[in-house]
Amino acid sequence: MAKVTGPLMSMGARGQLGKTLVFGVWKGLKTIRSYVVPGNPNTAGQSTQRGYMSDAVALYHNANMTGADKLAFDLFAKGLGSAMSGFNAFCRAYVNTVVAALTFLLLWGGDDVSSTGGQVELEINTTTGKDVSVKYGTSAGSLINSVAMVEDGATGKYEKTIEDLTEGSKFYCQFYITTEANLGSISGTYEFVVAST
Figure 1 (tube, rainbow, N blue to C red):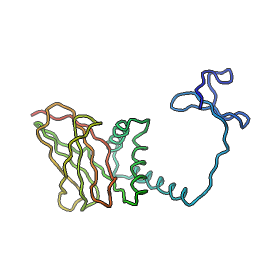
Figure 2 (cartoon, rainbow, N blue to C red):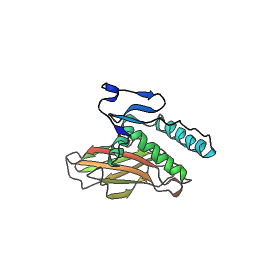
Figure 3 (spheres, rainbow, N blue to C red):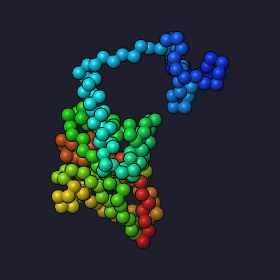
Figure 4 (cartoon, rainbow, N blue to C red):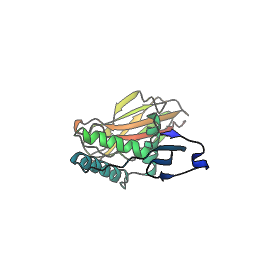
C-alpha cells in the first residue's frame, strides 16, 4: 500500500478507480493499492473462525462488561505495543483461547476497589469454583507480581488485599484464570491510585 498526498490532483479520494486502483484512508493516512477481487470461499475453517469471532463480540457486549471493564481492555491493548483497540485485544484473547480447545470465561468488575493507607482491596467476578490470580505492578507494561485470589463463598466473586504499597502511587493489575480448562481467560488492565491514610 502506498501513501499518497494528492491523489488524482485532489486532496483526497476514496473508492475504486476502474477496477485497477483503490483509494482510501488507513489509520489516518491516505493510501492507494491495487484492486483485488475479494474472495469469500465459504470453507469449514472460515465458518468456524467466523463463529469464534461472533461469540467473542457477543461476550464483549455482555451486560456484565461495564465501561470500566472495556477501558481496562483499552489499557491492556496499549501495553501490547500495537495499534489495537481494547475490543480487538479482547477478541484476540477469546479466539486464541478457544482455538487452543479451552473455554474462555468472562472476568468483570475489577474496578470495584477500595484503597486505604497503602493497601488495595481487589475484587473480580467470574464463574464460581475457578482458580483466579492477579498480576500487579507500578506500570501497565510491567505487572511483575502475582498472587492467587480467594473466592468469597461460592458466589463467583474473588478477593485479595495487596499491602505495603506506596501511598499516592499508581497501581495496575490484571486478573486471569489459572484453572487448566480456562487458561487464556483474562481481564483488561485496571489502573488505580493507592490512597493515603
